[in-house]
Image 1 (tube, helix red, strand yellow):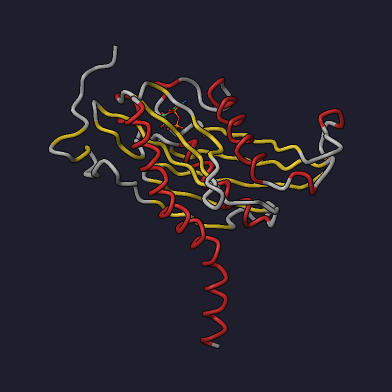
Image 2 (image 1 turned 90 degrees about the vertical axis):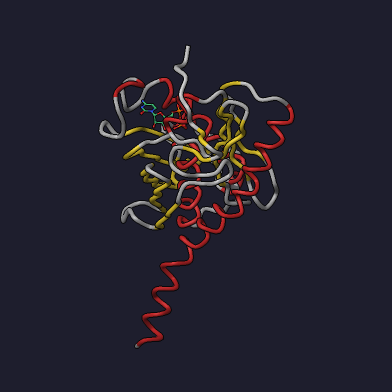
Length: 245
Ligand code: CDP
């Protein structure tokens, strides 16, 4: 049984947000020198780095697919990323699950047919976790992939929506996640509108579900803008330098 806790007081959440407010999101692209692509995200108190390698020959050989690239993903939490109350950091059952669903998001959007026999590896390392790390990790990895130049149909974003009492809220942090009635991470391809991931922990009515998806889509406009700005910024800086010179 979850302890009772007032997570919403006078319409405001504990961190001052309204029900539809995102936490602050900052993304920096190209942060790892040796990777094909990389990005770093700060999403509220979440701090996550993502690096992409490939396309390169799929190994071991027996896993390779002669028709398309295989997408590997490894999501891990650093040993210092959180309190120990959720179990051990590193590769555990939860990390295996998040790695699998994240790989599936990118299998949907990467032009895998262009790279038969190859693999593309996506690493997501949570340096500090505060709820919604799979969503923040997917949002960050999408930017890392874009910087790598690996062709994609779309640049997905992810965010979670859920329910606290009878209120539908966007982007739950860890304490809200722990005490909420429902948490639903969603990844969407903004151009096509395809849903690449939808998980649900808890129960929502049909109307609450509709409301939650509406919030996710609206937030997507902001998240996509921040992703694109992260991609453009290094080029803007170079251009500004030349203008000065
Ligand atoms: O992070 P996300 O919401 O996608 O996944 P979760 O399994 O619902 O975990 C919620 C939060 O619990 C994470 O974001 C972490 O802040 C925390 N957590 C942790 O501190 N240590 C773990 N081993 C697992 C989760």
